Length: 175
Image 1: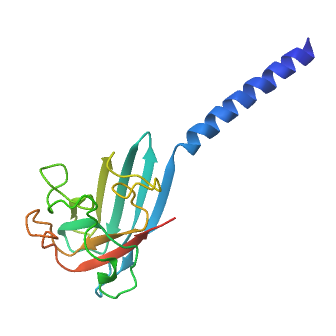
Image 2: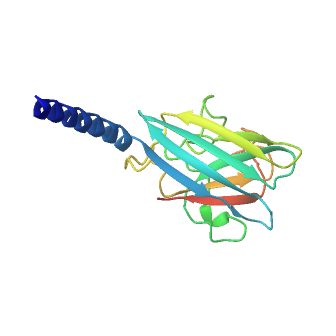
C-alpha cells in the first residue's frame, strides 16, 4: 500500500511539474537596457513579455526633462551612433502612414507618448497582439529592431516620424 501511495504521489508531482514547465515555455521575455544618446543623461529599462498571443511592453526611464516624450520601435537593432540614427526610421512592416497607435493608420512601431514627472522619471505600458517575440512573422516580430526614446512628443501627424525630436536613448531588441 505504501508503494502505491508513493507511486501516486510521484506521478502527481511529475504531472504538475510538466504542466508548470509547459506554461513557462509559452511565455517569452526580453529585458533591455537603454543607452543614452545625443549627449543626454536618459537611462532606463524596458521589458517585453509575450503570453497567450499578447505582448506586454513596459519601459521605465529616468533623466528626462519633465513633460511628454515619444517612444517608438525603429527598424534596426543598431544603437552604435552617438545620436541613435543608426536605428533607422520607424518600424513599419505594413507600409502604413505614421499615426496614433490604434487610431486609423499607424506604424507597428508607433508606440506613442508618455509623461516624465518633475524628477524626470516616466513609465509607459502597452499590451498588443500585433507584436510577437521571435515568431518569424516579419509583420509582427520585434526581434532585431531598436527602441528609441525621443526628446519631444509625437504629434501623430507629421510623416513619417511624428516630429518627435532628438533621440535621447536607444536599446536593441535582441535576445
